[in-house]
Length: 212
Image (cartoon, rainbow, N blue to C red):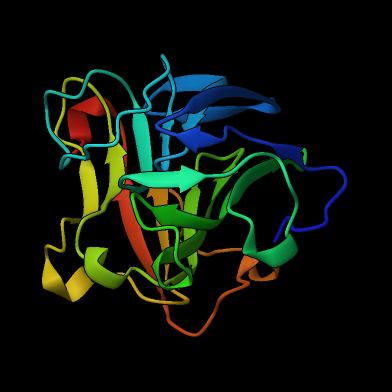
């Protein structure tokens, strides 16, 4: 929760926008270390170039760049204003060995009503682990329209859910999805399990050659 955190910085605002963020530690993702990425208002993290596209797709061998689809959908964030009155905004903070990127109260285009708000976050760890946490998903008519997963050119990505499928993986309030590199024990740090109503879902990823 970065609401009120004076050390956190604001991310992009508006509709179909993306902004470059940087952090202090190398984050390994499919064999490449990154210290920057483009964060979009549409719930996606892209590592090579700005990609604010709102029309999500499922993971594919035709991916154009490495991406993390935290909750890729047609979402909107408002100008930089912290927390008050449910203002939709994006914030991030570098904690030294992990990075938190938070989408708070963002809404699905074109409905700015209170019944279409989403709050979720991505945590990128220095050891390559990725944790996606979903605080509240008041999705109304759009509960089955998002993509959640990771993707990289030249291989099939690792997908948790795409446009509501598989149905068993439907997102819900309090869900956490963890992607962890090969040879790592799937054991999340307890201090970061902040939405624990539902059990974590663990998914393994590795090199491009081993991606499935």
